[in-house]
Structure formats: C-alpha cells, structure tokens
Amino acid sequence: MLEEALAHPSYQNENPDFALGSYERLEFLGDAVVQLAITRELHHFLPEMDEGQLTRLRSNLVKGTSLAIVARSIGLGNHLYLGKGEESNGGRERDSILAASFESLAGAVFVDRGYDEARKFVLRVMQGYLSDQIEGGVPEDPKSLLQKETQRKGWGRPQYHTVKTFGPSHARLFRVEVEVKGEVIGHGTGPRKAEAESRAARQGLRHLGVRGQR
Image 1 (cartoon, rainbow, N blue to C red):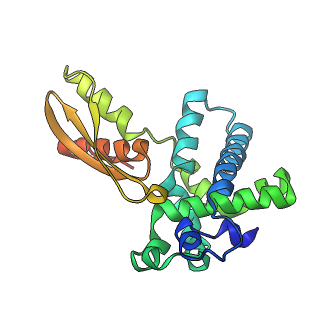
Image 2 (cartoon, rainbow, N blue to C red):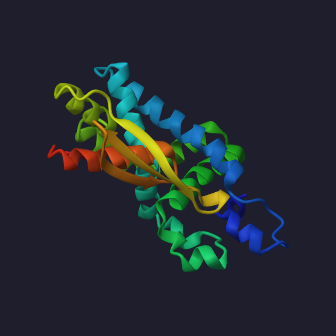
C-alpha cells in the first residue's frame, strides 16, 4: 500500500508490469482525511473563531501549495515512483505532485490503520506548519481581497476566464486571467481552477498596488 501511495500515474503507464495502481484513488480518500483532521483540530483549539474565519484558515492549510511545503519537510519527493518523462521534468519538486502524494499517503494510513492513526499522522507531520499559520492569523484569500478592492472603487466584480488548459490528464494545468473594467490585470496557472484564479487575483492585486498579500 505504501508503494501504491507513492506511485505517480506516469510510472504506472511506463511500467505495465507494476501490479499496483497509481496514487490517484488513495489521493481521493486522503484528501478527505486531511480535511477532517485539520477541521477537527481548528474547531477544537480555536473556539473564538467563527465559521468564516475557520473556513479561510482551513482553506489556507489544505491548499496544494501548503501541502507541498509539508511534503517537502519530510522529503516525500525523494521516495516517489515517477515515469522517466515526469522525472526529467522535475516532478519530484512539483507542488501538485507533492500535495497529491501527501494526501495519498494519508489515505494509505487510513486504510491500513484507521482514522485515529491517520489523524495522528497528519497532525504530527503538519504540526509546525499548522502552528505557524494559526499564529499568523486568519488570511484573507486574494480573490476576496481583489473583489473588495474593485467594489470599493466602484468597478464591480472581477471576472475570471480560463484561457488555456494543457498538460496530460494526470497533471492538468489551467491558465486563468482576471479582468476588471474590461482590462486583464492578472494571470495565474495551477493544477486546479481555484488555485489558478487565486494566483491571478494575487497578480491583479499587485497590479492595483495593493500590498500585504500572504
């Protein structure tokens, strides 16, 4: 199960004799495990926060870039099974792959040992990052900040458009642009539309001279 949790789809595609599946199914399961573990921890230890604050903090903790940081902290990329193409393209350091492999590892622990052990694993590995994020306060996501800024100026709501989708099915990337008053003020690329939109919004905020983004 550990081998399956570390096997990227490209490795399975290039090695038909590999009897196990790729990490994708365990990633699907592990995503829910990580979400629940973090949600329970925030709910228990931050009773002063309302639902909106908890939701923003959780979103910041479980987004792909955050999980990739956690995966790097335990050297997870060094243990992945990658196809030759993915290896040559720097797959061991790619945020989307590192985040997915961390989720798949959490999913594997859940299947093998149950939820309590999976929760302990997630919190043990994420504890330092979790503490830093809590101490830093509740972040406001770039899309919300951009919308507040444009509405404050009377420009209406920003409009997001997916302008390009590229990459293989197991490593799809989305290119998004954000438009305000008919002008494109930011672009962003990411493995999920939400991440691409967030990056576009962050660039848009810089374009408008809004500082203090996290």
